[in-house]
Length: 316
Length: 294
Image (cartoon, chains in turn blue, purple):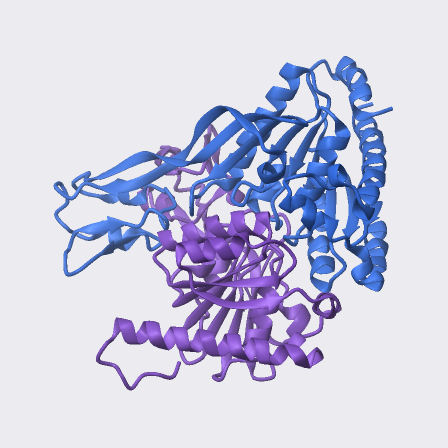
């Protein structure tokens, strides 16, 4: 039974739209997450897609979304000094812990560095003349689009902006809404690298996480940390080693260690230059075909079955 | 002198570049691993760790005897880290950004601050290279305070190389902020180009001098080159696509030691970077003509 077939059963039991999300992450960047997600989008045939790598989004380069809805992402505030009302007492300079306020060129009037400002509001509070405004901060944009593989929710974080985790949560929430509205049974999420704020926002509460890694000491180290994260938040995890034949012995080590930590071994993908060729031509690897495409098809079969099983286990 | 190695896209070769540059510079180097979510420098240099200390965020600790539940602290907190309940304050330490506002506004002086560790900063040595590594604890969301703690250890008398985290968000900014030069590493693919353009926007917003290194040159197309030409970017080096390099890297080897044909490439890049730093410095201080060495 596929995930989408399993869904009505789950719905009947919980009485609300609980749509499984598969999140692809890696720990280390550049291991092939986006190429795998784009191919899965083709193979799943009708999932909702979400690009949660909001500060370096790439899925749109392959899936060529037609933007249908565009929203400004506003999150938190930033301090703005009104120079006409400021007398340069310097109280704000003393209290800012983020070095976001400074005076320039012999002037005693402070200026806010919007990139350093964390939006804590302490300067606004201490200013004796109330000469600092606290304005809502535009941190980026998000989009609902259509692609040849289904609807897609994606975003663009403002340059050097804060709150990437909140933008990730916004994208995920919108993807769930689109899925519920259109009756789609799976959400495929392209996750960010690392293990910090945006990764936590992209993965908590998901039905499953697929970790795509590479057979290098860095890939091994970072997938270990990503697996520790999925255990920490109790999310079922599966592992795939991409370009596994570049270093078979590290591939074995990664899989052995993943198995020991209770992760599913979902498959391997061969090193194949057609992965880059597909990207250059704006196509997915499975649309172009080749050895890696065959591996990704097998990977998808395995992941789909595994996700369905773990989704049932979680919501019997 | 601080040189940050950064990239929009992950996996373009930041760590490889940082490690091999560290062994190719003329002057003593300190290498700061600021990719605290996925620190990898130590896997290649195996520094002997000589010290380790926790780093974190100053979070509020409330004295229940003094607190009158007035709510001023909760009202000020922008991160929803303080909830006022009928029988006391509830502090969500993991949401706190450490701004210190709550302690400042408390009229009863009932809030002290204590360090909540979010990771560790390790000091080590690998031959002549001083290595400082930040390692975020698993489950922690906020990396920038730890990155700032690593940056605070920057040496004054060595060339400081920074291995930055990927992306263009607050973590990357915290790592490269205030550098004398940012080296943006990319690969000649559409993803590499897209993320390079984002990184260029970020370093321009920070007004930092920067240059570009194209890694795995020859593996993709020419669009990254065309972009660099059109934007007039300083192309510092092209490192050719080489399966031997990928395999050596995979096993954790240092390229300039394992594959001798790569040494001249990294030395040439190190000279380019040294020359660029000297040139930028001369441009900033025209009278300081004697200062040509970096």
